[in-house]
Image 1 (cartoon, chains in turn orange, yellow):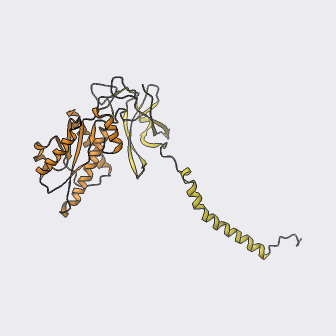
Image 2 (cartoon, rainbow over the protein chains, first blue to last red):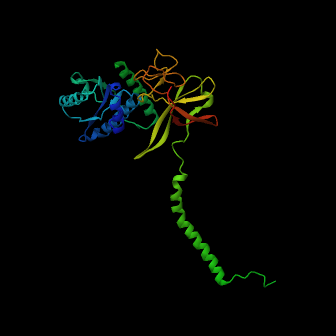
Image 3 (tube, rainbow over the protein chains, first blue to last red):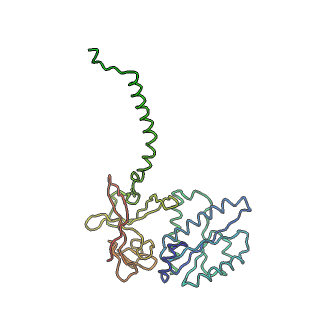
Length: 152
Length: 170
């Protein structure tokens, strides 16, 4: 399920079946010219990833709006804000929270995060619409789906 | 003889030419509005359209295999390519079956023999929904109706799939 009217309507009607949150973490910055293109690309790919995971397991997970943060921001502060998000989500019967990110700096703060961090090695560049990229993403999504299922 | 020869007067000649040219101009002006007015009729309905899924009929076996294809979908705001999938196989009567992989419970993607504990069945990973090979939901599992069945046709030995049809409760 996604954060849109139709899906949320379905969610409200079937709450007891949906116990898992997918929360994409997307870095953003415009100050370093050298990295902007790479960061924009990573955000594009992660969005595709999250949507594909949602598509496979739509009946049991809710894909929340992405969490955007400044790349240079203090991770401790961000963790605090994220935990506030999660606290709000836990007002509903969610048992599993998965963060998905390409940003390895979250790894260091993983223990403070309320939930499981799925860190994926990023794809640096390429054409997201090309056949090979789609195949690659589909295969990785299959593995992530397996991983999520092992928590259920 | 000479009296019977058709004489075209200057006036008649000009009349004919001007009506002819004028007619062409009027037709030229009218053709776009007319085309616009009947345009919706000329557009093929995208809903009932069949798409070539890239599978030859001779390659269809009794073992369900997954096929993926893309269709154009106009979605209010934008037109996009949408991925479609189906599980295709031949049933015991040698008929082609193309089942939608969307679980009728809450829409997860089911797969053939997706669970080792339940061979010869479609399995939904989300809430352990199960279906028999013909797509009928197994009582006692969450789904409430069978998997949708795609319309299909065969052209030049290739499989074409159309709309997914909802089937009644088991």
